[in-house]
Length: 497
Length: 63
Image (cartoon, rainbow over all chains, first blue to last red; front, side, top):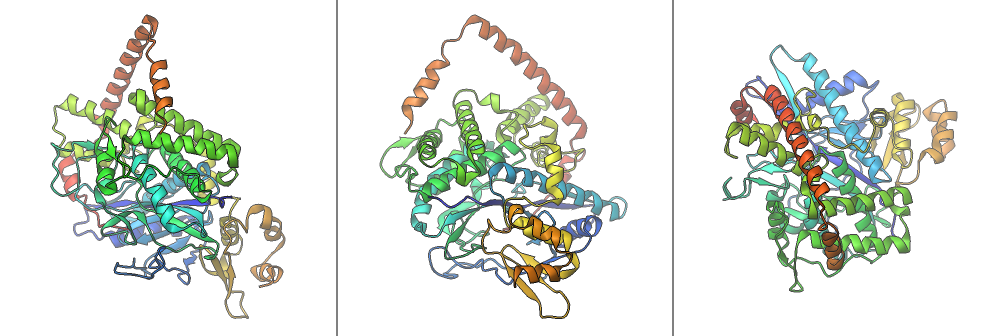
């Protein structure tokens, strides 16, 4: 039986400081986060780096010949009462959602992340001199060859051989682009012009050069091997997925997380398709992204030629068999599991028969319709800067400028749910304990991270409370305890640490 | 591979009737009008100096 697919999503946002001359993106990102922390939070709690090991490789070796990701401990880093981490990563503001137990919950926290960035941006802009402005984009590329990520994380069973995960998830990653892509004008792969690739399905496919590896900033791999479980490492892995786009469409975020969680559960249970391995994964990843009619066939290792849709149908059929045997408990229950399966089938069917019916739910399809209309109206080439501006503005988080919001894309969360998720943690994971402690005992918490919290209750040395089980510390476990404990000292006493 | 399922789905769509075609035409016009409205709106909010905005939009690689 698969382990519960606890999941989260981390997004690096694009940032522009307008009219500032020599703008520094690290300083600009810090301003964004500080504006939120100082404007909306009672007290700043820092991130704790004690348990971070991003250089450990899932294939069993440390920092082989690759560059281990750097941890920039000196940059702004905050923990929010909803259990999220909000920080400066490289030269971008980044927000990691709290751990969630199903894809719908996580899509809601992803939308809450957008709202947090919008509030941060508005607050920061109040503080800037007249004429200057900070602008945030939820995208993955500047159109000039620089990319930044939107990573998904899923809890997987440590006992499943990593090599099997790689083999069985790779075809899914290559083919899921057709409903996960955020769309992009042109190509940033070396040597390709607008004439060859006027528009493509994903923002990210251009930037992947390897099949498997540890890097995230250079020679990006389709399957990333970072082995940093942020949980009991004897029982779990955290699959760190770097191959996705940041979506403006909530439906896409939901489907991306939901279908991937189901496929990973199938892999845990050894029921995923094993006959879909692509002959040239990196090449196929790009070809799928460039194939707007979805008609191209790709060669598999077994000699067959299939389309991305064929591969998706194979995973869909296997998921049906898997769910008949195991149910949907590990992806959040029957209701959510059936909903994901239903929407998955609907979207694949529409991609096959009636792509235009998805203009209000899939970013790349919404973009394509809009861009073609705009191009025709103003008689523009795809390479015109106005087209590039349009392609940035789709992702612009300024409410008066952003195009994605104007289209009225299909929602999966409600405004009320998003409002709740901005300040409150999901009740079903350890994020509940983290978030509620921050809200209730802010003065006694020195630092927090994914799998522990450090308390300072005065007299004694600092005390670390480990949280190695993502499904412990939930509302049903600790709500009463937290309500009863007036102080952090009392909480620690009752916890027996 | 789920080839059989796909073929079934394709055939189920091929029995178009005249009524459906007329409805489709009407929906097509509605969609066109909706797109025109959206494009009008976009003309109003698009960055005034698009070229400069795009030129200045340079990000550092991340992750």
